[in-house]
Image 1 (cartoon, rainbow, N blue to C red):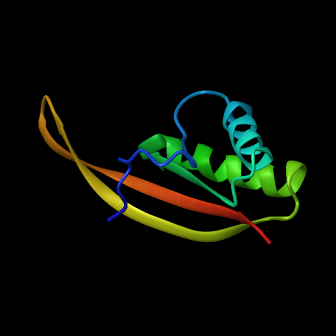
Image 2 (image 1 turned 90 degrees about the horizontal axis):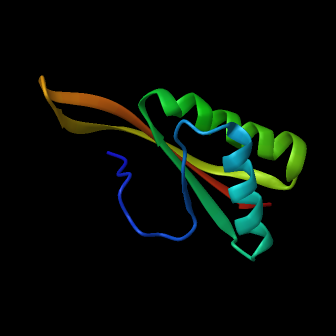
Length: 95
């Protein structure tokens, strides 16, 4: 199961902001010398994480490759009980 918790500084948590905000965050981390950056998202933000990875690979950093993709499920407590939410973790690295 993919965990979205952690303090790793090379992790970008994708949410509901515009895709380009996350693209800029990854470009900044790579520019500062990070060898690998991990995009993490859950629920409806998963498609945004995929968009970020594709925009990065096709328009900004052509030498960036997808190292791994992990999917999972997280249990969240809500007002109506426990809800299962899908998660994704996309590791991007230089070729």
